[in-house]
Length: 159
Image (cartoon, rainbow, N blue to C red; front, side, top):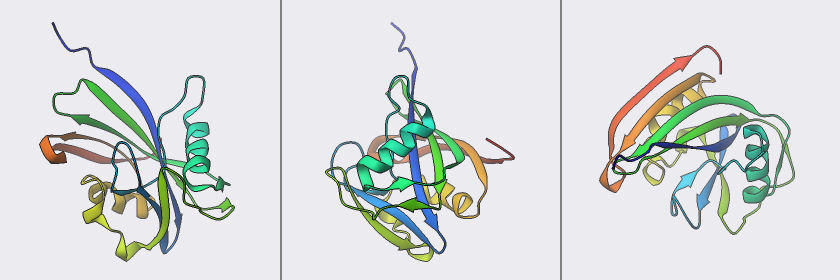
């Protein structure tokens, strides 16, 4: 029997107030122990943008003022038929103060001190595009121990 490939939509949002970015240490679940942007699953009947705002509120306790979609990356894990389609957003303005939640511990990083060695291995590839205000699309295939087996990443004019 053939594995049916399914796609799951997810959001990832990074607050970028140059020269700093707000990342969160993942405290539980998928990606635990890694610094990452904030985000997660899109609920039924929810727009991708609304999901990004909700996840930021739940994980960091802040209300986003603006949201700019900058990327879409598909992630596949060898042996898993599910494709994770991650919609990546930048936000520059928010209200409230970033606070730790059950899932994430937020922290500001200077763009020259982003902790890539403690992040997903794909981040070092697309983060320069993000920081350079480019829009991009791509695909990453991960093997055992989250090693990147294949990658495709390119700039696009618009989302």
